[in-house]
Structure formats: structure tokens, C-alpha cells
Length: 194
Length: 278
Image (cartoon, rainbow over all chains, first blue to last red; front, side, top):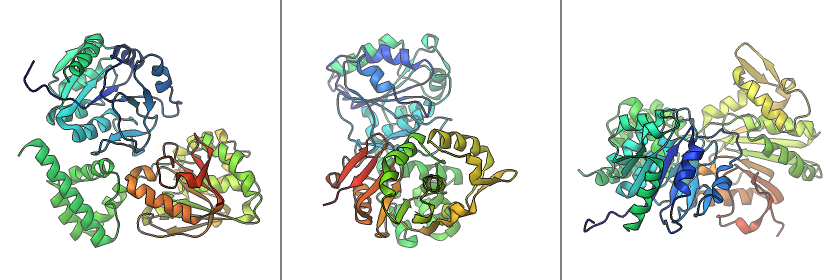
């Protein structure tokens, strides 16, 4: 172990097609003591009732909720971006929502979350790109890397849709390329190092 | 220069830019949500090929047309007719019955953008038989979008979506009764426009607008920081008659504000609140 273990402060996850299964693998495997906040953009139909928080509430040992505007980001909590809103992180580590136009044809957009979270958390951020059939999140992950954060991409050959992981890997040199199970293991391990 | 230092400097430049905009043009974005403001400015700065925010500030000070462009960038004008149809349905069920008991009512759409929700409410009130008993005020700080609201002209390709929303919101007529179609656009019926007074008003810098029975301000507060949200919510409180209704966007809440206890929740999911009679 290095003499100065890196202190991570938050995790952001971007995921699209195939996301429900992928998220389930990771979220259900997190330790109940996992203390970092996790902010998630899952692409979802704009007029869908948000079923994600309810869906994961019973499948994850940590509290899960849909993000409210201007709420403080709390430890040990998993936040989903609401359908049809962008989710952004402010410098004071609170959440802002927005209905500005779609980015990468998406609202919520992974890039919007990742780019704002990167500026708020700098090298204290862990960014993860999972399965998806588009390019959203690639620029955001590159920004996280640029600002010193840790970048993880689901191994494309293991993704239900590999375009999103591939685009992320083209945009930046990820620190880890892992299977879903290993991503969960890695998160628990990083947390254990705190 | 290290990355964190670069970002700190950038933040400083943005603050100075917003200060300059306020002093030169009187528009105050200093208490807008930072992440949002930065994204919008970044978008314009990159498009114009400006090296940094100091250069952008210089251009803003000297080029009024450029300022108008940035002003549009900073005001989000994403909206639609009967946005969140379930919200309008609830207005019909839970708000209108109370309004019907008044001989005359005033409705204020604060931050009305291009007017889609203004016409939605005008249609709803007409169908509820309140046409002769209502005055609607529609305000926005941006003159360009306010003029669009006044004109009531919308692209025809949006009409299908608007019609679906109207039906889901419990509309009782045919939506096509409310506009005349041209080739590429539709014009809202004149009688709807006549119910509305459009005027310029800035929630950040201007004061109480008048005593209202209903205030709509949907998806505007999310662009403000907490301090400014509180200030504007107080303005709404002061502008409502006792028993008046406040309608916010579906992800906006009074819950965390200083005036939370001065309102009762009428519909939680729809974010409809009612000013208590003290």
C-alpha cells in the first residue's frame, strides 16, 4: 500500500442500453459499509416514470434515490438523474438539475454529469463507463482523467452494447478496463483503502 | 500551471465576467447555479474561438450584439405546451375548483419563455368557463423570447406532441380549435392572446408584480443557487393573495426553503403549493 492512499470522494457512473442488468451487478455487490456517494446517469425515456430508485432500493444495500435540485450530496447514498433532466455537481458538492437541450441526443447526459463532477471533485473522483450503444460519456471520462480522477471502463467485449465503452476508450486512456464483477470488487477495495 | 490552479483561475474569470455583465447591462447572473452558467458560457466561448473568459468578458463589454447572444445562451427556453400533462390534469382537478369561487382571478407566469405554458393555461381556463374572469400576466427577462410568446407562433412539427400532451392533460375539445395552421407554423387563436398581458420582468432584480391568485414558475428556479431561490420564493410569497397557488417544476421544491412552513402542499408530485391564510 502506498504511504499516502488516495482519498476518493465520489463515484460517477454513465450507462445506457443494457444498463439495468449491469447496474444490478455492481450496485448489489457494493459493501453495506461503502461510504462514497454514487451518482448515476442511466439513459431513460423522458416520459418514463422514474422506476430506477424503486427498482434498486431492494437490490442494493445502500440508500437509493432520485436526485432533487440543490440537495447536498451525502455519503453512502446512490443518486439517479431524474428522467428528462441533466444532473450536475456544483463546487459545493450539491446537485443542480437542468432542462437545457439534449447533449449527445440525451437528457440526462453522462457528459454533463461527468464534466461538472470532474471540476467539483478533481482527483477525488472515480468515473465509470458501462454498456451503451452511443458515445455519451466519452468526453466526460476524458475530462475526469485530465483532472486527475480515476477512470474505469467496462471491458467492451463483456458489454451488452459496446459502443459506449469503446468510445470512452478511444477518448482517453482508462486506468482500468474491467468486467462488471471486477468493477464492483475494485470499488469495494478502493473504499477499503480509506 | 497545475490543473486545479487553472480551474480556480477560470472560476475567478467567470465571476468577473458576470460582474461585468451586471454592471454594464444590468442583468444579474451572479447567483445562478455555477455548473449551469459555466456550461452555457463554455459553449459560446468555444463556438466563438475565444481563448479564455477574460477575452470573452472584453468582447461582452464592447459588443452589445454579442451580449444579446450570450443572454439567449444563459436563458434556457426548453418548454412545451401542457408540459408534464399530469401536472395540468392536477391543476384542473385541484386548483380550478377553488379559482371558480372567485369573481375575478389573476394568473402570473413568471419566466414564461416563449409562452407555451401560458397558452396551455389560457386554453385550460377557457375550457373551465373562466375566460371572462381571468387576467393572465406573462413575464420574462429576455425580450426576444417574450416577443415570441406575444406572437404565439410555433413550428408545426411540434403540434403532434403538443396535441398528445393536451389530450393527456384532460383537454375536452379538439386541440386544433386553438390555432390556425400555416405551412411551417401554427398561430395561436387571437382570443387566447387577448387574455394575456406580456411584459418584461426580471425575477432576480425586479420586485413584486401584483397580487396574484396563481403563480406558475416551472423549471426556472433550478438555474438559481439556493440563496437566489430563497429570494425569489419570497417574492412569490409576497405576490400571492392568501390562499393563492404556487406551481413549480416537477423537480423543484419548497421543502428546503425558508418559507416552506408558509405554504401547504396541495399536490406533492405536481409541486402545487397553497399560501396559508395566516
